[in-house]
Every structure is written in C-alpha cells, then in structure tokens.
Amino acid sequence: MYRIMLVDDEIGVRNSIKAKIDWHAAGFTIAQEADNGLAAMQLLKEGPLPDVVITDVRMPQMDGITLVKACKEAYPELRVIVLSGYSDFEYMKAAIQYGVKDYLLKPVVRSELTALLGRLAEELEADRSRLLEQEREERTHTELLAVMREQLIWQLVKDEWFSASAMKERMTQLELGELAVDDVRAQFVTVEMRIPPGRLDDWSERKDLLYLAFQLMCRESAEKLAHVYPFHASSHPAMMHFLVLVADEAGHPRLMDDFVRRLRRDLQSYLRVACVIGVGESTTGLRQLKDGYASSLLAWSQGTTEGGGAQPGAQLLARTHAFSPEVERKLMQAIEGVDMAAFAKQLQGIFAAERGDTPMFVFTFLTLRIILLFHAIAKKFELGDASLQSYLWNCQLAVRDYSSREQVLELLLEMAQLVMDEVRKTRFSSGQQMLEAIRKYVDENYTYELSLASLAEMFHLNETYLSGLFKQSVGSTFSDYVTKLRLTKAAALLEEGELKLTDIATLVGYSSASYFSTAFKKWYGKGPKEYREERARGQV
Image (cartoon, rainbow, N blue to C red; front, side, top):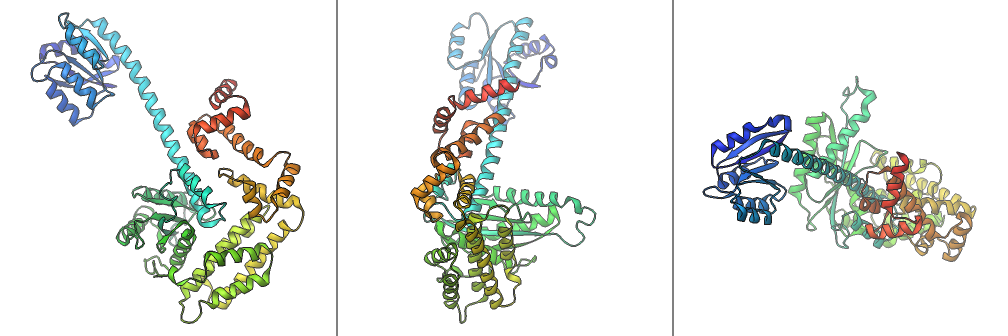
C-alpha cells in the first residue's frame, strides 16, 4: 500500500478528493493531510515520508510552488502531483521547472485520478523493485568483500607473501587502503569459544550451528567498531581473530578493553558459552603483522575463561631482537635448501640470544613465529592433501602444553625435518612436481599481480628455465595461463548472473571494471555484459 499526503487549504476539497475513488483498491492510502505548505513540510520532517504528495498551488503561508521547490531540494525522490485550475498557467510553468511529476485539474475527475494513480503505482512498484535489487547487490557486494578481506588478512599473517607491492595493490582493490601503508599500526585479538560441559548433551549433532553463531556474533561485534577486521581459519571454527588498526604505538587500551569485555559478555549472554581471549601487542609496519598475530596467540595461550592473562607480553616484541627479518630469511633458506645443519645453527643462535632471565613467554613467542614460518613453507611445497599444514597448526596451538624448553626445541627440529622432507619431495624430484607446486600457488593467488621473475625467485628456479618448463608442461605461456585462469573464473561468475561487473573484476584480480571488460572481450571476442546476456538467453 503506497502512502499519499494530501495538501489543500480547503477541507472540502480534500474530502471531495478522498471520496472520489476506492483508494485502497487502487493500492493507495491517504496517510497524511495538511492545509498549507508549511504544515506539509513539518509533517515530512517528522516522517515517515509518503510516496506521493498531492498539493494545491494556491495556499496561505506557503503555496504549492514553494512546497514543490522545497520538496525537490530536501526530498528529491518524492513524487509531487499539483492540483491546479485553468487560470493557474503561470503556476504550472514554475511547477514543471521544479520537476513536478504530474498535475490534476480542478475539479478532479474520477477517471483522470484513477488513471494517474495507475501510472504512479506502476512507477512506484518499478522503483521498489529497483531498490530491492540495489539493496541485494549491495548486500552481496558487502558479503563478498568481507570474505575476500578475511582471506587476504589470513594470508598476511600465515603465508609467505608474493611481494609487498602486490599485497598493497590487492588491499586497495578490497577497500583496505588504510592497511596498505608501510607504517600501519595494528593489534590482533584472538578469541576461542569454550563450550561448557553438558552444554550440548542433547544437541551435539548441531555443534556446527553453535560455531556459526559464534562466528556471526564475532563479525557483528567487529562491524560496530571502525577499523576492526575479523578473520578465521575454517579448520578451527571455535576460534576467531581480529586485526585492529590503532592510531599510535600505544594503541587504545580503553577501546580494546571495552571491545574484549563486550565480546565476552555477549558470548556468555546470547550463546551461553565461555571464551578465552588474547590481545597481542601493538605493531608498526606491514612486516610486523605476523609478530602481532603471534603475540595474540601467545596471549590467548596464557589466558583463561575468567579473563586473566589476556595481555601477558608487555614489551614482548621489543625483547625479541633475535628474530629479525634477516634471521627469518636465513631460516627459510635453510629449510627450503633442505639444510638441517644450517637450520639448527640458526635455531641455536635465536634461542641463545634469549637465554638468561628471559621470560618463558618470549621463548614461546619465538616458537610460534618459527611454526608460522614452517606453515608458510609447507603450504608452498605440500602437494596432495594438507595433512602437514594441519599438523603444524595443531602444534602451534599445543605449544603451551609443553613443560620444558628442551621439549619445545625437540619439537621444532622434528617439525623442521617434516617440512624439509616435503620440500625435498617437490624440489628435488622431477620438474613436473615442482611445476605442480607452482601451479597450485598460482591457482590460489591469481588475484595478485604475479610475475614469472618473482615466482622463479620464490621457488629457487632460473626464470628462463621456469618459462620453458611452464610452456612445455601447460601448453601456454605463464601470462596466458594467468589470464585464462582469471577470465574462466569470471565467465563462471557471469553465468551465475548475480554479481555486478565491478565485483567480478575485483574478485578475479582486475583493478577496474573497464580493464576487466577490455581483457574479457579480447579473450572471448565479446564483452562481459554481452556474454552474460547470451548465456541467460541460452538458459531460458
């Protein structure tokens, strides 16, 4: 039912118009009445807005033309119909200039009013459908953007980066420009849901729903605050993480405390579950994001459901100079070079620098950072299933359960050997296996601006050799392979018919819809819009 405001200074005229037709049958209701323009503007200000205003032109205090002009400025989407007599020609010219939708001559004829309302109903229905479609597209865009952001942040803290510039470009595409700066300051929060004993005795088969509710509540909590980005690992549905941008090195202790307190309270009140929360240290720069994430894991490992120990590592990062970017690079070289002696030497140097009165939490933090490195290398070289990555993740979560430093060091050496075995199987067998690892990496990261030179460096190959190997095994150049990968995915999304071109371009890694359209037309011989329309007709 569409709402109409009727404005005329003569109550007899208003009553006559109301009695002309069955308004309800026509799909309308007279929701508001006013006897002059000023009264009408006050009603509009108080809301809710009607769908249509029908107004006389000659009225005291504020005439209809002034009302039309005011409506045009304040409520440009509002439809206004003018009531006029034959002598109001000059008024009507002014009303048309201000964008009046239509007019009715006095005295109002029933057939003309019915016809006008019929046209209005069609237009309003079309507008409503268009608005619903726009809202659906915006909701889809928001949900898609959130998923891609979570994936990107997860890569930032878990995987080896392709390059800092490629990561920054992808951040910009995903509207994370505030994160794509060299001196970005951030903190991480890790939250684990703990289900009380007996909580699911009669509902154990629906634990997945409780996990989903937990994740949704965490995301909703993040939406209430600016600059808070949630992410999680699908393999561990009872854990959520948050990247929180802060304004200075000290962070926002009060803001963070309020966020943690509210999150704990909401999980307890609405889901009736406890949680363990860890808040990491504030970091500066993209390269420190992994440190910040690891420090939140450490804080989580020392926390309790009552909240104690949520921030155990005061000045933790300032006390871990032994794990510099250069040391991390040498560790990676030793593992990917399958050189256990070199790795053990680096490991000894790291922990020797931290001996003495160094707290156990610093030792544990270094262990977590090394396991993160293991995980990134395993993901790069592990073919087939991801069993090694799962094992490493579980070890990362279980570090707090080890009782001595000696046990932890033994575990690190054991994990290093497992990762090296995986690297050896891929790097030093056939060129085909190495190529499969590279293809797997490209298939997972084609949304970034990949280059053959950087891939060759990442996988320790000669660029010319890799180019030839790629063309021989795949049957196309590396550039064509990436283009085909992107546009094949784009074509599948176009056939689904739900996403806008700008969203599809972002999803497959193009910086703009126009660039995407040009590349698509060059590859398929037709633009993405034409391709979608043809597929839609074929489905019908």
